[in-house]
Length: 220
Image (cartoon, rainbow, N blue to C red; front, top):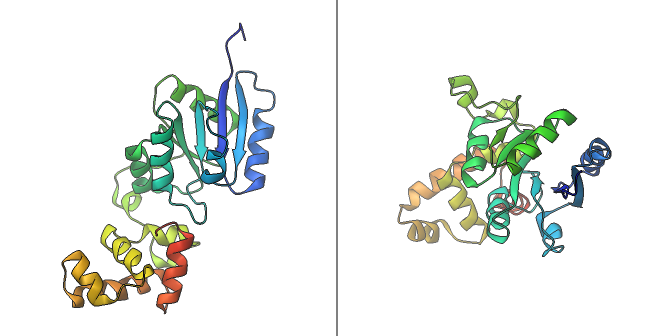
């Protein structure tokens, strides 16, 4: 190592098997050390002021918003490089996380060699997007998943527009349709239309289901 300190990596992921896999992959890597693991960003932040060179961030952690998590990490430690570490391969999601400040985007099924390559690249000031990540602008690659493809709540979340997320947030706070209309300077009819579209997209029937979804996805 020639006296050079190893790169300090932290992993935020609520799946123990994923964390265990990374620990095994990096066990013999002298220049990268897995310095901390946490099941949520809140748990990781309890270890501050410990400093990490790189943080692998799972985007789908119940009760946390990946957007807020990325912004919080960058605000708390601007010199820490955040890499989105996820199973979701959607171009819009890739671009959003990079725009929010992530230095890289990796899919969880990648090899040990690419993990090491990515960590070293972002520490060197480069942006690294995994070789299997889709960023093409073709119509097929650009589109969001439709209802027939939905497998979990995180994918459902990707269907919602910015306005629909705003309305869902206010529904979760107990606002009536008229109150939401007044808050957003739109008509009550428009609010009701958005509410119906949100229920349809998420395949829910009641506001109670919407509120539970919003809480678990960190949208409120």
